[in-house]
Length: 245
Length: 245
DNA sequence: CGCTCGCTTGACTCGTCTCAAATGATGTGG
DNA sequence: CCACATCATTTGAGACGAGTCAAGCGAGCG
Image (cartoon, rainbow over all chains, first blue to last red; front, side, top):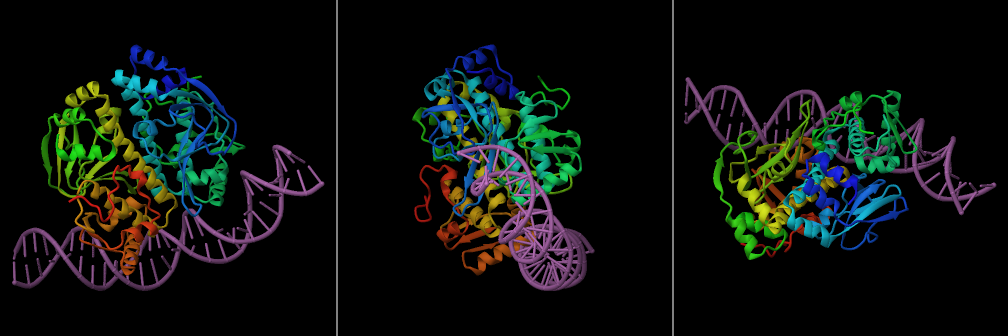
């Protein structure tokens, strides 16, 4: 398995050298997906668990009449189908938001690891719990935060998550979502997202153009969005200044 | 451990006799909590994981300015603090919605089980994944469903969840939430919840009085709320007719 | 060049919120 | 056993945030 994956696990909890070795020993096959916005249903390798190595994806849910809600944003280091692997059954749909590269781990190898290493199991379990924690925070956003707060909050979240896997460049990071996709994340309409972004631009808090976000004042944005990073469960909270290269 | 707990695990996945035995062998101490609406922070036994045996509780999140979002409803059979146990860190606040009884399992015993039984581990892991799945569905509700749809959807969900642990009486079940608490679940205002409930009553779909819900037409309600039960991951989907006594 | 797609803008509508007050239950203490 | 808090539910009126509809603009691309 790749460095990224292990680093991601270690961003939430510490691992023994032995655990790390066991994880690194997992065989992984790298695969590329070129399309944008394409549904990934059926395109993932059967009986494998995938780790997103590069690019952005999302889980979403369509209602029968065309309404769509994006349920989570997946960034490099995220594990795609652990849920499916553990729980079975149908899972939410998946779509690529950019070209992706993913590594695929055979279920059998993973299963063996789970049977022999309780600590590795717990690390994997943890990643699903962090995802749930993020989902809960989105509930708070959509349920109780205003449009302006929601956008600010989301940008802070993405910033820290990307920082944790070394995917930011100073105040800048890639966020390849259209405004209408952002709307489906935030439970807003496209038009309102547009107006809200303009407001944030006018306040000189952010720039956002062709998929690149620039954050001019993280702290102000965090205040505006009532953002508090603890729900991300990052062990060493990456602050704007102290970002790993 | 009690029957209820094991039954709950088995509602999502099948267990070996050995696994079941290991789980039943977990020592559990029964505790009662009398208050309603009281925060449970600090009242749970330290270094124990709790299973709700009877009553209703919820997780919630307060924003600094008084807004509140309820993040999950906990019903008998639900495990309260597994997340905390696995992931550590701060967890959302907990409140009792009725008098509760819970059994407490010492962390050490649970830890030992996790280290020896990968299958039991997976069963426990699954329960946290089901919770996440429910959280996702709530995202869809709050993000995209209308007030009427949200209420209908929630009632269908609670009905099936309670049915899965044998806590319904025909079309009737207990739901000890005030309308303002319902509002905090659904991301609506109290006033609007009230009007929405009235509409459902006028349509003769439900009755709801002093914490007792009566569902006159589950299927109609499910259609209205765009409800589809797969996200609950129940192995034998309890349908209105086929409810265990 | 002429699509298409994403962004932007304006005008209007509507679902839901807020404020406010009345009604009804429940419980408590004098 | 009544008088009086307190809290949940209900109702009305008005305001506002966000949605919808529609059109124009701009960039990328075959």
